[in-house]
Image (cartoon, rainbow, N blue to C red; front, side, top):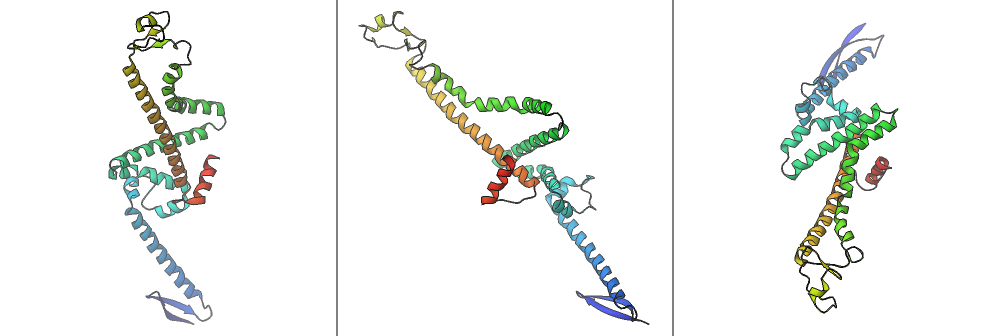
Length: 260
């Protein structure tokens, strides 16, 4: 014998037909229908959330991020897609930046592209490590070497032009008026004792000042570039791993796992 029963679930009235001999079947059907309706509402909410995000404008029209696919599930369950979403939103972020922030956004994209290139090359050449190292060296090696030796170029002048160099220990500036204990400046610089160069004392002072400035600035520049690249590499791996901002010991452990 069957009868109609009304269920009130979260303010929604649902009718079910129940059999006294099979109690629980109607209620089971009721819950299945209710859950199906709830899941549908959840999917709609997720789709709406995605369409309001900046990633929607970059991914619209692409097969990988179809409107009927829940972007929430992709972000939650796939770390690689988190990184892909971040990179595909580059144009949207770049358009909103100004000044140094715009330059930072541009440089970050370049670094991320280089990391992708290295990772893809490593996957393609897993069985040929020698060729892999050769390609990496040709692609990045020369540039990194030039960057590393840049500050050392400023050490050439003080290394060569000093009192300990036997080849120039008797050189004098073109305006040298010292008699060097020879009685007169003319006699001292007659070519047998001391030789006047083509550089005056004032000119040499300017050269050494410029050289010192070059050494300091190039050293700061190289250190800044190294630190900046390391920060971006850590950010790349952090986004790829699906992690938010990390602080303290967790940040130290995360960096240690990347570089060691």
